[in-house]
Image (cartoon, rainbow, N blue to C red; front, side):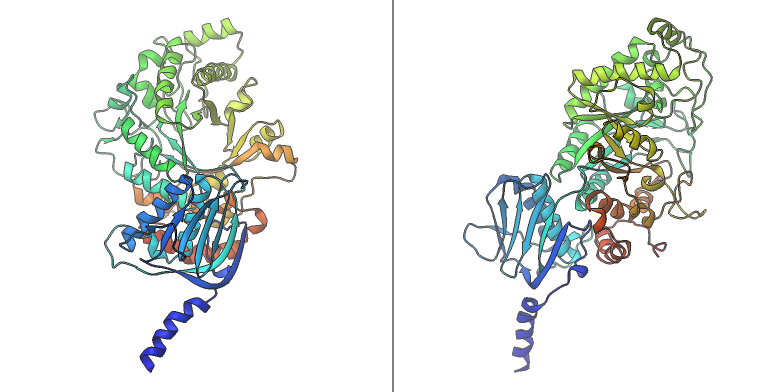
Length: 544
């Protein structure tokens, strides 16, 4: 009788077992979670059905993980009762979803593809962490016990972003895809891709081939030696190079779209443009310019000349190709940190100031972005830029998005004026900062240190804002600048586990955010999922 009793226990325990809501370690925390009795057992006999093509990407995402880690795919059915049931419903909030797990059935409901995808990644977070395995072949995990529960969920903000800087240090296509995938697993939906800076130009533009032939290479024998402080930490004896072809970028954009992530390209201008300028100085610099300046990063001659018509023709040519690659309706064009002294000795800028009655460099930059914004309008795109452009401009389109990075002050002023804002304050959301001040830590200290708890504490909406002004704040974005991230492992270290905290700041209502409760989820299942994927996260020794 003993073997029979043992078998009976194996059959009945999952049906009776109940996990409390506190033990269900979802990140970000959903808006509503109710634990129910029992467990759904997913195995090779489980089937799925769907009444909408909107769920196809979500289903494929789950199937690919099952195929890799369980060695089977769910069968499609119209009649089975023990199944995953994807149902389209009208009326749910954008990106919202409903998920109900019972011992007999899992029902996932949404009104659009993003909702189905988020319902699916929530379901996968309910499964054993082996579902996230990557890399080395392991024994298949064939049976998955999913605790019964009911989830009703929707995002707090529409813009839940993360920026990766591929300009200062280049990252492979494979790593960019992994970065996007890990964003999507935690319901971050906007990949801000920094593709040009002083240290490198990283995207193929067919009209201007020298951007990648010249501007994507730095080091000995190139026009971009390792003098862009503090662009690289470590050996500087070999040429560093790399760029993405248009075919590769399209592949990445499509990969992101299947995970409900949009891609925002950034081409930095008029400053932070050393790599651009060394590629085409005849278009972007007045040959008679005698200006002597250094940027805050100690870079000379890194600012495009707004007095030259060739500057605007060049920008038009770049944007003309960008819009064929990036379907997202926004393009980020920088606008930050124009060095003092830039344009001072430019005859072209002097003539422009006289013609347009411009009084100083701030007025010149305002003129520059008015011209650039007209180019964007021609291509049906909207400008995103760092907060400096609001200080310098009074004629921005009302839909222009300001990214507030120096703190909340400019962002709050813009919101109160009805200007769309994305909050990305350096002291909370710049993940190139050290976790703790130490020579042994990777990262900068100028805005930090910033540990995971500090990221989690950030609240983008202030009591001083009215409800209409709060609506102007589109969301939040973290930034991973790569001066101190010369390898993918260091980039992972700087990003995680801070991106876990960012996802909850961006998705969950403030009353659902409790540090000690988040800490428990992050330290257990949150980090286990990352470990299964080979993420080189920082061990969270600073978490109290």
